[in-house]
Amino acid sequence: MLIGEYIHTIDEKNRISLPVKFRRELGKKIIITPGLDSCLFIFTIKEWEKVTKRLGNNDDEISFLKSDQRTFNRNMFGQAADVEVDAIGRILIPDFLVERANLKNTGAIIGLQDRLEIWNDKIWLEYKKSAAKQAEGLAEKLVKKEDD
Image (cartoon, rainbow, N blue to C red; front, side, top):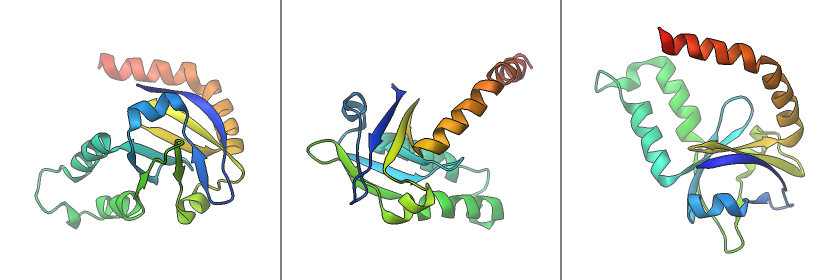
């Protein structure tokens, strides 16, 4: 399971070292794509296959006719990149994804069970503070949804 928070340096070539704890679970090839809330998502190949099936799974066979799905899929798949994890555990983040996530000298790598997220560490800190203030209310909403 991918869990935890780590702050790592991003070098001048846009490489970031993945925490050792995550490397074992990720394997040598991963998928990096634009995420939500100003971050990047990292998936194992196996999890990426699940994501692609879910995003393409609709009641009809011609889901590309739905505008919202086309737009989201263009964002998610059109800007995805398969990336190799090098011998010392680094990945090269493509320039367009570095720019999209506003990554600078350091990045926050967050484990979220089935994926990693990479954030600009300062944006992550602000997001984390905001989320902590909402945690109790969100927990109650989630429990109510399950009870319905």
